[in-house]
Length: 153
Image (cartoon, rainbow, N blue to C red; front, top):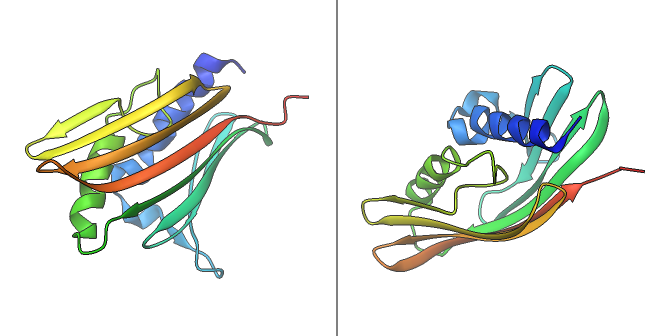
């Protein structure tokens, strides 16, 4: 397992799961959370989140059944905004992430009056960031995330 391979898998898993917009893969859990799973070769991706509004969750990547990477996240849409529109645009932004920064969306994504910005630091081993969505110059969504390699010793 190497970092380039891990980043490729995270990008592939992200695009194939939440960012795909395919709600059929979302499994509602007895505790009220939602789980999305994806696997390819020796890698397994597990995303589990609570929400609604606001929302929070975690993603874990397993390699040969061992946890190797994770990210936790928390976000919200401002009251009075159309959540469906905001999360629809977020899905588009997340589907445009890059292999260099596969954890959430790209540094910037624009579509008409919508702008997604992702300010982050670090690399796949240890990173953190904040993403925002603005519409017509007004910021209406924000989320924070942090993560990196786990269980290396």
